[in-house]
Length: 212
Image 1 (cartoon, rainbow, N blue to C red):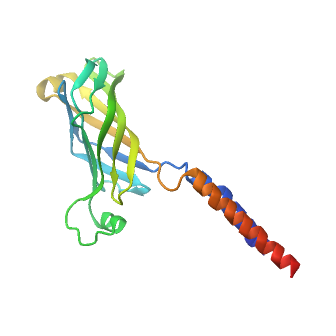
Image 2 (cartoon, rainbow, N blue to C red; image 1 turned 135 degrees about the horizontal axis):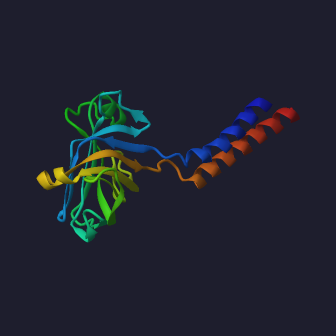
Image 3 (cartoon, rainbow, N blue to C red; image 1 turned 90 degrees about the horizontal axis):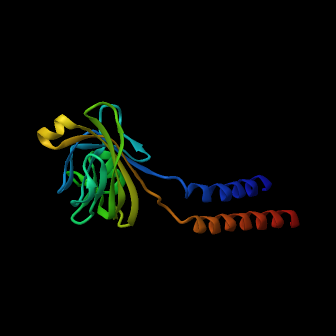
């Protein structure tokens, strides 16, 4: 019985820590149209959704996003895009998405997260690897609904590579890596109370055993 109580206490200590784990949505590849009117992504592959990773050479679905117009700065030096009219959507395909959402009869892509940017969206020049090769990050908060109906507000960072000569041709850059962080599950305080309850139960069981 002492061993059981100890295990309950250990679980109680570990549970609050789990609340601080950050499930991630990762996307790679695809292109982004970049103009003063805003940005629009195309073809970015979903390679990791929370703790599910796509096999090498495959994807779990897609991530698409768009922003409002450039409101300050410039495309080449960095600035700010508006969130008005923006989008941020994640869809899954295949058996894993059906199993995750319980939508076993679904035949097409399944919406895993549907939302849009809120507030200003930062467009930052982080490096220039050559005379015409630029690296930018697009950072902002997205607000939306997860497949189970939970509303979330989470940060996303999209690393985008732009070749100036290519941009003058079609106004496009390429996505290196997109990272969207989610904090899900019960709040740490809730888990702490649950853990404390486990300790109390374990202690009570131990006292009862010793007193019998």
